[in-house]
Image 1 (cartoon, helix red, strand yellow):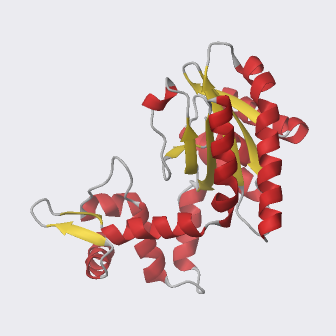
Image 2 (cartoon, helix red, strand yellow):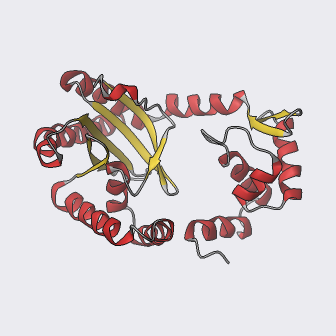
Length: 265
């Protein structure tokens, strides 16, 4: 069995008697597609999903018939089909968290001329659900809904790791250690420091791109996934100065979003 805890988790899903294995495998095939891997052949899908080529061939044909994949016969490859985009639109339109938080995020971004984002975790990455970007210099690096960023390097991911349940945090930390063994001692120290910061101050900060500082605060709600709000600016002032300037507005935004969700419930 793979030593990668996330791969082991996927294997357990395939073997769980309460789950439909064909459906689980079909979902894994859809997950294989992402920016930079938008067109894949059966061999590439098999490698990414750890499924046999025969299984992949059968399931890609089924997904084509269901309208979720398009088959490029000339290139012998597949790409996601239009209905997948409509699923994403339905998710965004029906999300009560987005409905409550997005207007507040936009107001803060416009008022302070900063970038404000909302994300949640998908395995070992953070996925943006919404992003309002009003710093013109940073806007050259476009961030859109659905974009993924590294969990271990970003304030979003570090804030998430600070509040996720201990068993899941342990599995993710093991996976991140395997992925970045050379950097792990320093990275582990940064992740532990971020956890302490969230526990004591309600937020954590990171600067994983040159002259861009981001701070993030987890939004933990009953019976919902863990969400994370963040604000970021392009600055040469450093992390401490950015925290002093933006931690207050970020924490206020989180409380406003919680209040809006409670009022809408």
